[in-house]
Image (cartoon, rainbow, N blue to C red; front, side, top):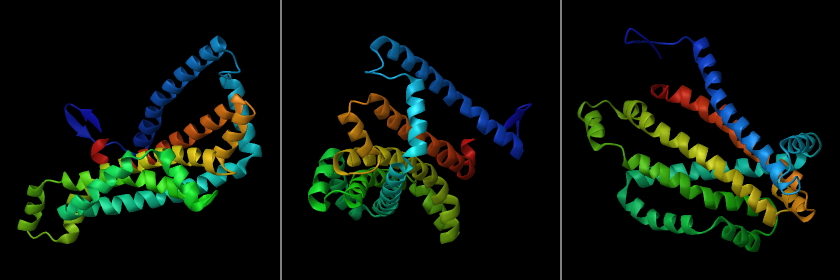
Length: 264
């Protein structure tokens, strides 16, 4: 919104697009600062311990052009695992937030799942499902679902009873309650859960592949570690971070703009 003499004036679509791209310069500034510090660290500690940004960038481009299969495999596993974990966690969390008895049953189980380290689940998955897609996807689901569950449950529990009673008192109906009460209240929590689930899922898929797969980004990092190729390891790290940042910029931020106009 633009303020003119204290009165808010709505922006047109072009100004909204310009404002969105202009806000990305803040992120670009932070990235450039980190790259500068990275270059200084490389010059201080040597390229073996910390390769230069230029060498890592060239290696990342080489990977994107010649080794796309492993990247696609990781994206496939991550998409399935994150999607199932998000839908399962949100669904169970909304139910738990609506019914106290179900929340009392699920809360201890969720606490136990959150307290178990992801690497433990990787080991269990290798015992139960051996190497491959199933073990990796299982690890993503079992480690990410508790996070989305907790967020959805808190979202439902934080909804004020007075507002629900107000809709009931005026007999506004079920669909109006969903449209004007539940959706605006839950949207922020759900979008935040999606962001956390994606970032966590990406980390888990790389770790699970590193320990329990013969293909994918994690497996290639394991190979590079064996060969002491720090440049290739850093290249995969940069690619992973880039995927997460692109998801935030292309999916999460537009969802916030479209579904949460009061946050603009």
